[in-house]
Length: 199
Image (cartoon, rainbow, N blue to C red):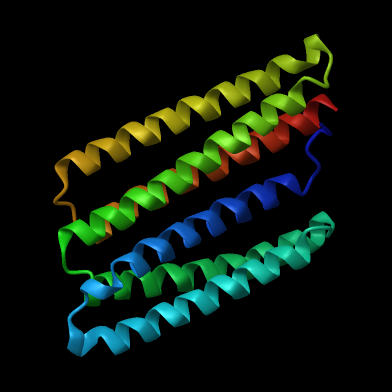
């Protein structure tokens, strides 16, 4: 397995977001039939708009697959704007059509699962890549991966606590997701930096 390149940080960032978008859409779509009949047409239109945003996000990622780091930096800035717009639309959808606590909880659970899966996939990929380095150079990478896994475990614990309470507002749930997403980004950046220091 080749060592991560400069663009792996951006690819990991994008994959985590697209996985979370897909999980969010799947959850909202699975509950769309529960929206009151008089609001269902509008709810379906919002879901269609969210799918378009997802498709555009995914297309941008695909176009960047073989790009250099400078191109990824520009694309990431654009994708961050798209991500923020997607998040705002999900917020409006949940506040308008997802009044039931169960729907908020279901959406939160699939989003947390997508985040945790991304954490573990990146950590496993980095651990596999670290094996290519000499033992004396591998320590920093192993320590970074260990921190990443510990952060993922802490995030999972926080998510489970919020799920047990079950009465949190969507804003509180979304804030927890944003906090752990930021931790993932920091861990991903730390891993990226660790690989480049040992090269």
